[in-house]
Length: 614
Image (tube, rainbow, N blue to C red; front, side):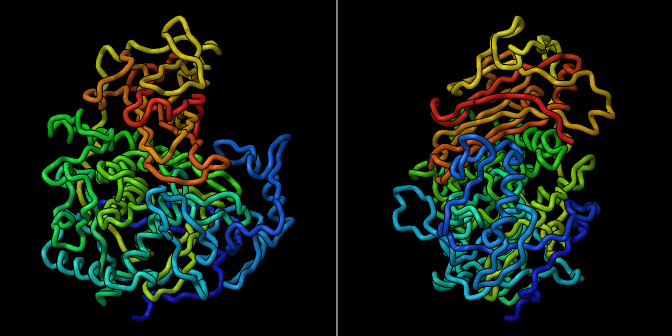
């Protein structure tokens, strides 16, 4: 079948002004200021440096241990000088196409031919996650605006006709030879290669590329689903085919969709948690076991309040929602956005099989995409990105050229390798699809404060309180410190008693520096603000003091020098919570971290501070 868009080998250099498509039945538009017109560099071979490249920015920092910050800016100037000076590393042409050197530092995906062994669990030996070799790579060009859009429906509402069509498309995909990049095997391997160290960053052969825990998360998965959907439509000769989404943010969708649970269907995966089959209700804040399950109506209410926290309270800026900047030359995992932590991570682990050694399939990044339900889960994650931009306030995409010009490579419905860039993914309508309008019940599920919670606050603004030392108002701990069960620390606020205008302009953000010693394990901890209990009960999780949750989905991946250790940053928005607790005049807040999943020696809290994000 002919491609539905026209590939070209000419690199597009103009940043597209986007028109945000309808999400949940609402049209919302954002115009982006012009960014510099930057050329996109091409991929190099994996881990084949001709010389050792230093990324030094100061004493005792080399390429394997560059000094970085949360933003990844501390070594930006020096790194860009290296890229400009060398030219060949960052902007080199390859046998698969090239482009001039660039002054920017967007993360680039190398050629599929440069893919190397992924970091997979030791009990999955011989697994090759790399795609077939590419003979050419073409650049994606946005097609003209379509007159008819593919409509993604809630999976629990699809009819028998769609179910038959979807089953047939997946059956045909699974029947393709494993060597075909369009096959279900190879499509599943895409996630493994990008998420488990199959690729190095272009120009930085000792730094793995990781598409989670940063601002790459949403656009990568949007492109991933786009090509998966196009391949399925091509196989059944139906250009209108659209993937369903797992509508877990509404009550009717809070169960595993029935179309995926029929053992005779190609959508079924036997490697799922048997205890979580319908009619079991999904727990969006899943701790790794079912011993703390709430009654069904309480679980529904808790799920909706969690969605409110992540989509409203913790999403007032692009950084809070989309994740932290991740530029070429940075170590991966600068910090994921609110929804990437929860419910994205928790739904992955809730669906995966606890009896498997690594929570396979959905519960581990290397195997997650082997389950057809993965694509429905991520379709709803993608929908959240569209919905987010309709919620008002400062909710707009990044305009940073290093984000807009970051690239990935996928195979299309013609088995052609295609280079795509984030800037072309911002408007789902331009990509030819949107989402069926459904209710957003979580918009009105804001947790409310009790009368007693309003009188609990930190009044000490001493440096000792800010650094986690004991204060006169609350017994706290000195950081860094392992998170064994719970950890309480006072954090000073740089500003207090802010006006409404100041609060609208800048979000008050709690920044937590975290070390996960073994990121191949499931880790989850909850964050509470000014809570009187050392270990708040999960049954009270939806109270106003609950601020959010950090989640690590099990995976193996090289993070700097240590293959197991992950250094990352976790952020939660505080402005609304502080107002709700009546603590805006306080000099500081008491932060209580509660370990919900993971071994007691696996998480170290290095520091906590408050900053402001516009």
